[in-house]
Image 1 (cartoon, one colour):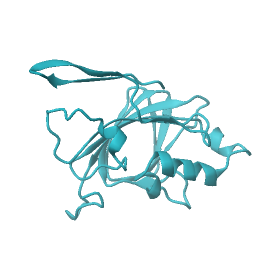
Image 2 (image 1 turned 45 degrees about the vertical axis):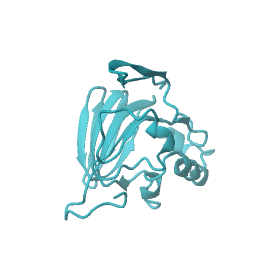
Image 3 (image 1 turned 180 degrees about the horizontal axis):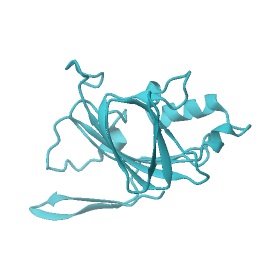
Length: 185
């Protein structure tokens, strides 16, 4: 899904458009046909309303925010049939994911494809299509307009349909249930 990001901020005492166009950190997967990912914005643990003039999506080394920080990501998830295709190479896809999704890709479980747990509270909105949220106990079918709020849960996104689905996710870095800081802190 092509994303247009309109960045507005105060400059010289006036609110104005600072940037209008595609976010610079958008990728279209080669190894997983139909998978797309766009990091729309990233904030540190304590963001300010002042715009620094730089784009944090270009400089961040991880998509996984530190406690209090955020990552705003839009994903297009292809049908599960892509992964079942005889030409699909899971090792090449994993290497590509490591390059395109640093911080999150390392959390994917090698013995259970797609399953992962992030130290975040997530606001997930299905923008288009159908997705299934797989959990330890069952799964939930979601369609456009459905919203999921996750609290550091082990999960995977599945697309059992024959069309791509688009998901918007805002990840908020959190401390674990014991109050310990996550790795990003």
